[in-house]
Length: 150
Figure 1 (cartoon, rainbow, N blue to C red):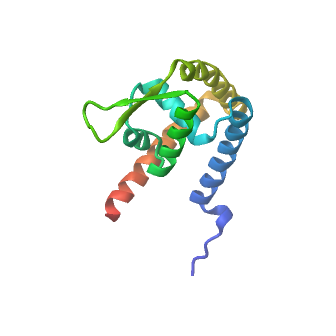
Figure 2: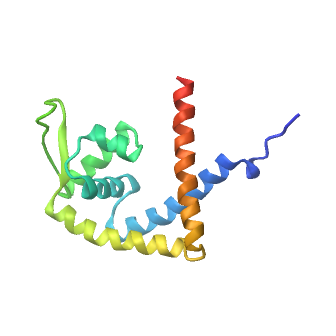
């Protein structure tokens, strides 16, 4: 009989690594910008993609509707994000960064890159390239697995 050893189970190890990295980022962004992880993700996605519906933000960030909604409300309340009617769907709104949100993003982006450099300081360029390729393959495999299960 095969026994599952959690410390050797790659999905578990990946989850632990992801949680540790997210924790480092969450601590920095909360202390520096007063942002929770879902909020800074929305700020970054909106900075890259412009006006988006909450549904599109959920797809882009892989966060559920409730998490996106709460983050969006918090950002609107802080005047970091603006809501506008969605001409393509009257039931939804388009969210975009306000000028204040754009200024915040200009502060967030360098900090994000600084954290990334620190976390990967002991990785060679080839290792980073390999890791990125492996993560993309893993995401594709998970997507294919999900599709097969439905």
